Length: 260
Ligand SMILES: NC(=O)c1ccc[n+]([C@@H]2O[C@H](COP(=O)([O-])OP(=O)(O)OC[C@H]3O[C@@H](n4cnc5c(N)ncnc54)[C@H](OP(=O)(O)O)[C@@H]3O)[C@@H](O)[C@H]2O)c1
Image (cartoon, rainbow, N blue to C red; front, top):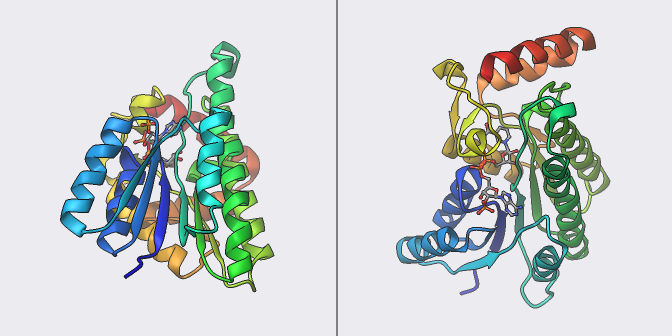
């Protein structure tokens, strides 16, 4: 029996790991992509043993053109069509932009924007031709307003949110689902990797990676353009939508001091 195939980028940790587990439990074969091959192989073995699905490991730094090309080729292979693509890999850099490491900032753009855009394009063409398939791009509630102290990160997520909703409309009648997932604070390795000390944030703001992935997959399968997981994040997103830009910007700047 052939099973549908799902590709998850950034599957070695956090929300991507949760997506890979969720999809395997639903009898998808999974292609897991990230840089840390040892972690991906451990995940692949665990999922194969437990769920009896095939898990293909692709070690790739998606900011590097050659490995990115390999992932593109896998996504566009007509002999092995992809049913679901989850563009989840992403990171940010905390700090004042004028003091930042510009190379790290460029990697944020390369991963969150350029790789995501290329992978969406290469997966979407064959899906539209077949009239089926689904792409979920992982953005952030940080994409709804400016994010002082994470200026580049917030801007990349604003791009992902806008881009994904546009593509959602373009293919609305094609049979292909395209959704944007906008998580809020989620307990993963993101904070440590992005140099955020979020210990000050109260417990109620946090979601687990499993909660976020479950909301993301449910929303994708219903072809929701925008998925904001959790009641608090939904309220925040709605409030930002109606407040004057200056209030959103200043509140965001205050928050950034609080969570450092
Ligand atoms: N956690 C939050 O609070 C939060 C909130 C809003 C949005 N998000 C978004 O959710 C997504 C997942 O983040 P997370 O919270 O799960 O973070 P995480 O725990 O740090 O996981 C990030 C994943 O991305 C992979 N990755 C990083 N750089 C990569 C690169 N150059 N090439 C390929 N893979 C790369 C990492 O694997 P390797 O190191 O093995 O490559 C890892 O698997 C991101 O897009 C993030 O912006 C997170």
